[in-house]
Length: 193
Image 1 (cartoon, rainbow, N blue to C red):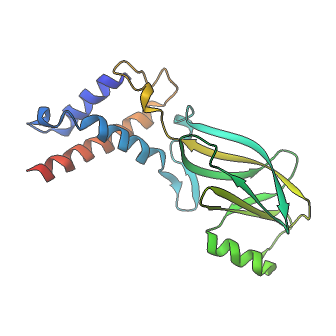
Image 2 (cartoon, rainbow, N blue to C red):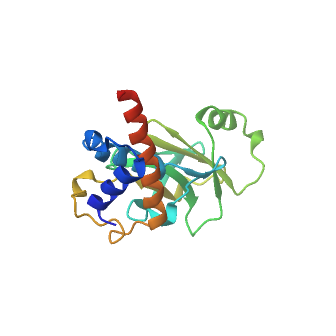
Image 3 (cartoon, rainbow, N blue to C red):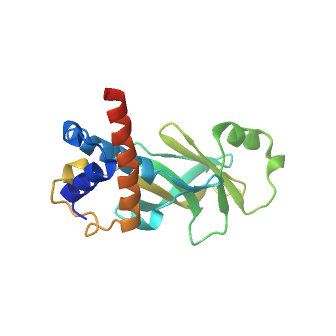
């Protein structure tokens, strides 16, 4: 599906009689919708993007070793260009720790009172600004983990003939983005009346 065709589809599906007046905002509606749909989680308890299998050009898994002190380590995210969404921290193949996401307050509570910890093979992670913090109680000096994240698209690649399907995006994902973009366009049209 080519970008120019996507813009035309958004215009047509909007049903706006005066859609030509809004043609300048269609690219913004599409790029905003693209990022919104990337961030849709599978469920309230699963941070994995709903369309993870259809956004593979933007999905990254990085294997890292994180030094720990007092069972806690941190990893700097600031070197990741275009970071959109942090999905998960997973154990490397070499260990069996299952990492669970906690918000920062709960993460700190677990650290202060580790009686919350129910199993030896459980670890926790949270995001604190430009850092990921991990915690596990295996008493090792480092943790080998895989950090799963999603990048923002490189909008400089998006020329009128850019083909999203050939670039590796799924049709279901692009269709969902178009639906959200159409709604954004309609909302803009209502505000301009």
